[in-house]
Image (cartoon, rainbow, N blue to C red; front, side, top):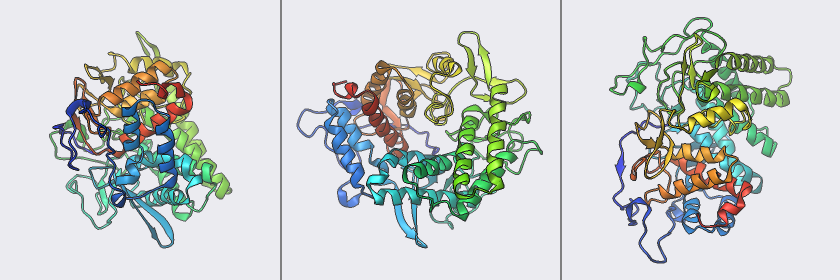
Length: 477
């Protein structure tokens, strides 16, 4: 997640020279929902399967504005953020996050994730995603503690003065557990869909070895480990106390995450959603290794570490809330301290079923969900424009479309899904795209007009709704 906190006031003028009314109000006329995609010749990548999906799904969406949003958002990653080429005979795909020319391991997975079901219909698209996997393992080999990278390995970052072991080619070196989980998630599901094992070469195996090594270092059983981070900044969430190691933890088997998926620093470093994600990823890595490298000691290491973290989550991640009962804490320290909140970025507590980390009907998750989507969560905001989860990264009273979208993706209630779709439709501020965050009372005040993860996830949500609740799309919202 890029560090961009300044809000943009939508003036109704977009950079492409197209004029729209602010706050989602459109002038009358046949061109009110004109496509906001780049011209065909300017698109970074084109997929026949994606284009066919857009045409097919839009025909089944009765609401013209929602259909227009889907058509703009779903292909946004391919249209604007990917650079595909063959390097040494292998596909390579660099994926920027949007308005920052850097590739986040998290964002790049999430940006191409909704295209995975289409790869069997489109070999070009399959090669593109194989290229993302190849690029990600290359990044991990450069530095498993970094979260964002450049294509040019000689490029120096704007954050080169950070007090940590920065190298050329690294945009930012914030240690986040999920940065090593998302590449496994992508590789595992790519393999399950395609059966292609060509991406699982010696470099990929080495990236898993580094993942396990890094996770074990950050269990902090043998001291604080090799990673520290400090930054000269006025933003408290960009700094890490106690000489860059963070506040102490009790080494109970959980993994420290110095930063959250928002790129904000943690308060207590055992970030619960990310530890759940690590359990899933370690078991997926073990399954892949079992298929391609069956005698590897690394398989048992992955499984043993997953079992250890899972056991520690059962023992230390649950607390009793006076109103909601047994709930998952957001962060813990192993000494008995709990931090109760949730953040819109994924992995979040809300997203645990989406990541296959818990069942949607898990009673502790159900209690936690009720807490998250209430005023008792300090980062759940209710305003005139929408309600939803935000987080410290965007500041108070800002709702994140990611949070609204994830609420819909994890809901089993059609009325709640419809509510989420309506809120997203009402808060794009006339731009035709999702944003990082917007003010709860005024969606024309938003951050990041080009944020591909939010756009593609919205597209995934529409596809999910079409599969589970087609009747919602068959009627005007």
